[in-house]
Image (cartoon, rainbow, N blue to C red):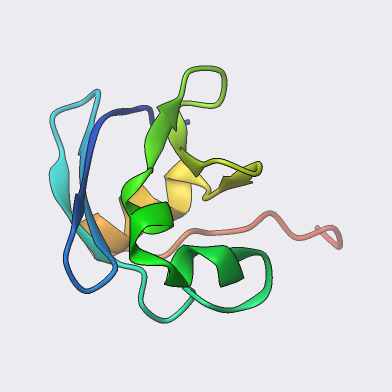
Length: 88
């Protein structure tokens, strides 16, 4: 699992992230903000309240809202996450 060690909220519902292996970059979350469990993040002050959850090592917001660190890592690196098939 990839560990996020720094996060900075940016304008336009983007976050800058740094991982423990030195990989860093920006992820645009505008496509999920305001939808489903991310509805409250449409409020820019709420979005800016992003922090690193020390247990899961990913970004989170008040209200138990978080994102998978591996997905964020893949987004920055431009790679796809391969999921294990239950039929294998």
